[in-house]
Length: 129
Image (cartoon, rainbow, N blue to C red; front, side, top):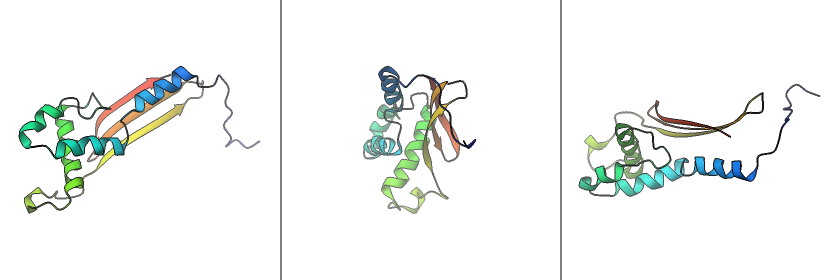
């Protein structure tokens, strides 16, 4: 047998842990963040602070400043070139949603998710199953 094969020893992932994993990752995809942000981007500026509370849904530990940074990237992506040159970003702006499933050497299962905006880690969560 090749050493590149993973030998899995332990119990299967039960229905409770599967549900926990699904709940942990709920809303934590680029698609979900884009859809959630698009609603806020289309709002009048006076309403934006109200809707930033709890944004983004799946990354509750992101700061208000981090949420604004994410919203700026989503706004640039959604609006494209925009009407005014001043609204265009100077360089590339990025938002990454990372999801990781970890099965450790001692059988420990871990879920990880993170939000990275313009290279800065804005939110990171881990959960052991």
